Length: 104
Ligand SMILES: [Zn+2]
Image (spheres, rainbow, N blue to C red):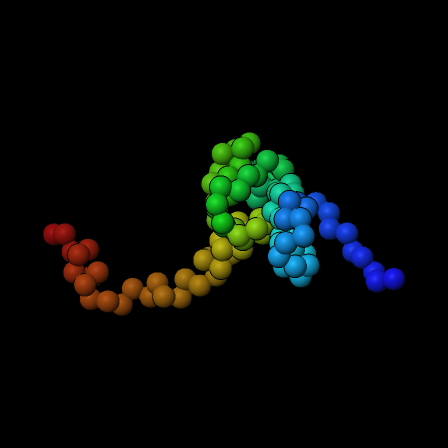
């Protein structure tokens, strides 16, 4: 007897069409996409997906960008840490800025 793997979840709507491989892939993604997502700002599972990569929290109404199918953890704290760690380019040597400061 051939092994029969039964499709379950959201891919059931496709019936016998489209093949098993693609259905397994989209099933995995849809399961991930429809699961609860934690808001990176208020840490409540109230985040809804507006579009691919765009998420909105229904609790604190924060709208932010993350992954296409799920909210990336620590997506908020990471860019801030990167931004603060490289203020090396702030060496104010261009002459244009110095001229503006002379207001006398
Ligand atoms: Zn929130």
